[in-house]
Image (cartoon, rainbow over all chains, first blue to last red):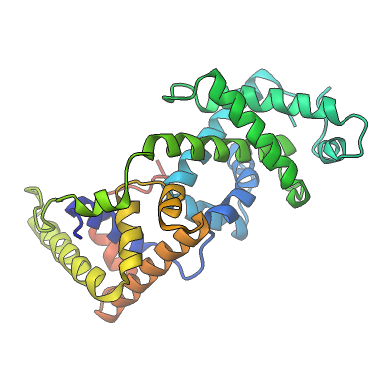
Length: 84
Length: 209
């Protein structure tokens, strides 16, 4: 088994930002709605929610889902101000 | 009038007489959100969205006790629906790709770097890449190497989990443990995380753009 230079470069970057304690994907999903609302409203992100941001820098799947969640929330906000 | 985040769980409770109406409202909201979130995605047709909305409702009801009200209920529900949708889309896309096939691919050589206007930076990057290759072989288990290879080929973690008979969380942990082992090995060799990131600093953080 071998890796391409691009793959190794990506891995080096990921290793550089790796923390001893990280959220897994389920834990990210548990907090991502609150994180998304903070981002959209400009609310202060707590230390606990910073872990969501960190997970999103490492997990392309959760990041993809998060990006679409933001898109959906913006669209719903535009069409229905009473959405809760 | 739209129910509040406090009202949703109560209305969705099995004993609530308003439950059918609440389910219908939530399903309508999920379908609307899924149309927006999946627009332009191959395979995300009307039938797919209807199926995902139904699967999402089941999952939302299963996880209702874990809703803590720290966000709007609808935001929480949409996050779950998008998770369900992307798992299904990725499964369809990666259905015919095996981990063994990825391992048999013949990639570029690790030292094949593009000419750069910054020869010193290029040399540093090449040095780190060479070192990383060595550490991957020395520090990681075969299973950790398989997971990293699959992840770096953009294979979804759910698909890796299915092929390895594990859960997505286990796959994330295997990857995390591998990255931690590599980070410790870099540090033992005298490189800090700042050194490593500095060499690759020209690549932006995906959340900062």
